[in-house]
Image (cartoon, rainbow, N blue to C red; front, side):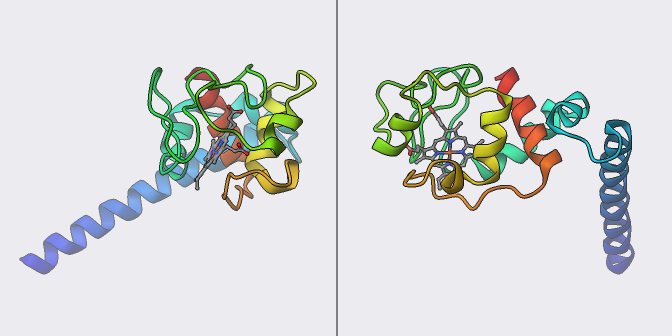
Length: 147
Ligand code: HEC
């Protein structure tokens, strides 16, 4: 009996995994061949991005008025200037300099940052390897836009 229950749970998990993969394939198909960032953002899903934000939440809160942890609170970050999001956070000189000329967190800068923070801003204190998958990044950008 116990074994049967475990098998049933396993099958359910496989079914769920297959479902989410199917959506992913479906969205990638809808984005077209070799999709650029704009095309990926058209099929991006903020709810999926919210799930993927789990890997950020060790260092960032996202609700308005949330605490600064190792990284600054990210509520409403989309559209703000680099290193301007949170006046009480101690940004690095590197990120402050990168934002000195009015550079903003738009889709393109967020995409470059999430792909490789150290590559975009050498000397940043965001110790994060980056997200290689472009659709994962687009989902997170969609979530940040909505937050
Ligand atoms: C290990 C901790 C850590 C993780 C994980 C992390 N960050 Fe950060 N993040 C930081 C730190 C520290 C900074 C400030 C960098 C600086 O001042 O150079 C930062 C800065 C940022 C900024 C710029 C904020 C501003 O006000 O200009 C954004 C946007 C950001 N992170 C997004 C993310 C996202 C999205 C994820 C998940 C995919 C993530 N971070 C994962 C630590 C982290």
